[in-house]
Length: 488
Ligand code: NDP
Image (cartoon, rainbow, N blue to C red; front, side, top):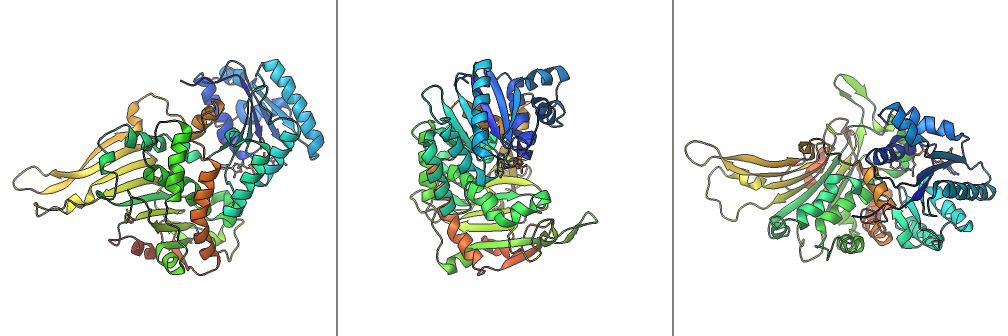
């Protein structure tokens, strides 16, 4: 069991949405569950002016995201402090450093500092640089860690240059690139399902698997994030980061041990084995993009993407992306992977479905159902795992129907399932980077995504409209063998 050493957590962007909605509630849960060290404090930092008391009210005392007795929340909020940076950077960083040192002494946090950058990405490099100018990257007396929010880069070039910039100030082992999908219990369970059991791994290859399907469907539109989303799109927002991380966990070879570097080495190898698509014909046939159109859902009109707030009325940004690709290695040769992510789908679901091949020889006439041997890894909602297989219908003859073996995390009763941010914050506090993406992994994921983005950017690929509330453009069905399989 890892220990959580005394430490001080500094959150940049502390007046923002993520801090109030996710980070402080996650810290509170860790406090409730007694995971925080004896000596611990949080310093929120942003440009807006707030007193400590105003900050505490905003993120803890009056937060609708934290539920508990007033007394307990008040105890926790005494660990929260706030420092405004003003606009004048260098002067403010000197003041920030003084405040840090004061809190470090008062709260006995042993010079162990985590800097969580929950700010616009353009500030990642300047903050790292300013911290370094104050000697706050120096680990001679206590460790220093840097957590970087997503998005990490906008393309391979920008991700590489951000990595280079950060490496000028912090060592790779000090940098934690967050991908909150990796903090989800079911995502980690992929490793356990595969490598703690002997029943799945022998089948986990091209001899038994027909294809792999990964779906991330959201029923919401872009909501208030139109401005950000219109510059990003589905491929950058979800595919390059979260979904390729899932692909890596499905594709990777067994690591030598559960050591973070061993796991990340295997994930890197997996990402490097994805076949790059550079030929326009291949890109045309294997990628589909779409955009949701105005529609009626439950009798109410829903905006089309181009009508959303802060979205260009002529926007060609995709809200639907589907990609078919292959993995060039011994285990996966010729097994197609189908990955799709979209907004305004009929339901909200993220799942991985491993489709197994049918038996080589059929002896039951009504045996189509055997084609349905599937392993479903449900990431959200109803986190769990499901095996679908053929069972005999009671009675005469051999009529086969689909049966299920399932496990849902909700069946664990009162066990507290950590939210992704709780898990990831605790890991970083304990110096465990297993669930954080390494520089080379992020670059490998961009290397695969870039040619698709380039092809789409040049206006070659058509953008298909789909009505809000349906399973994407009909044309996408043609991507997957057996038309219609993607319609749930
Ligand atoms: P917000 O726009 O709500 O907040 C941004 C924060 O950055 C504010 O506190 C702002 O405060 C601060 N800021 C801006 N300029 C500076 C500066 N020069 N120095 C210090 N602080 C500054 O963004 P979010 O909280 O939504 O997102 C933060 C990060 O997290 C982004 O990188 C985003 O992509 C990522 N993220 C957010 C998610 C979410 O659900 N919100 C989900 C996944 C990732 P002020 O104006 O007072 O300086």
